[in-house]
Length: 351
Image 1 (cartoon, rainbow, N blue to C red):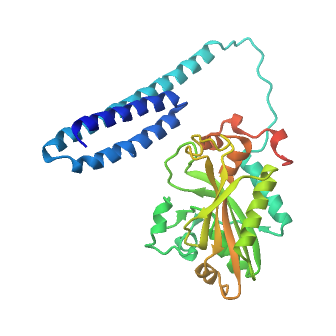
Image 2 (image 1 turned 120 degrees about the vertical axis):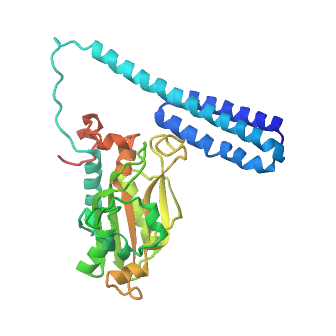
Image 3 (image 1 turned 60 degrees about the horizontal axis):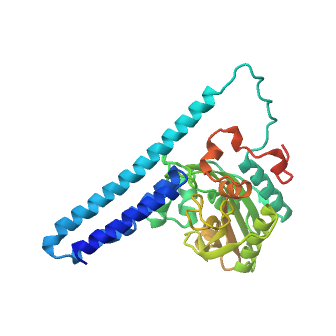
């Protein structure tokens, strides 16, 4: 590659940036497009500098950095215009307010979407013989990590950005600690689900929040296999959505299960086409699951040679988003009453 070819490639990247800017329908989409370009094509071009002759590397690097800055400014200007449009829209709404009009009719309250979905899932699993258990939101390192086969220096801890407290405890990153507590308390055979709130130090966007709701499920008995796991997961999604849901099962690493899987469902916001909620993939991670690791059984004082089982972590917040067509997870924690599920959409859930 020479400098002329580099200029042509940079021009194509800038044209792609302009096209993505025009297609973007919101700030999240703009951020996603900018990240995809700067960490994709531009990063690849930057790596190619070493193939240039020494006397051309300086000009090549300057051209790439200039293009990168232009693209960043392009998306920054687009975000600024969107924010300004929102402000103008709100001002127009305020300007048309007529204080002489009668007040709006106060609507009767309804369940939060996550609460509605949680109650629905609890009813389903109670009918399958599962007990509903809970646990503390402020957890010890032992129950949140050690007893789940995640020792202190295990790299899996890096994947869970944790809120540590001054007393050495932490805000639980999942409801999986209830697995070990249930095994200690009840012993095998076990059928339990543990719904609850979890906390992670996440970068907040349309599909990630630092506070979310999860439902951990655990079944331990003799001769339990992966076939049982898949059957339960398909039954769960079919009952929640009232129809068969398109799913895919792919390998996934979770220290407390072996083997582990990621069960994804087709995004119901965009019908699998691709949107900000599913990060343009058409799929949403909904059910990490797998067969309980023998070490976890031992921590729960259960003989892994005699018993096997499966565990899954259902994202109640994401499930509510798919069920009620909520495109942005931030709505659910915003306190905005428009984010509440309507009473006639709660699939039989009562207030």
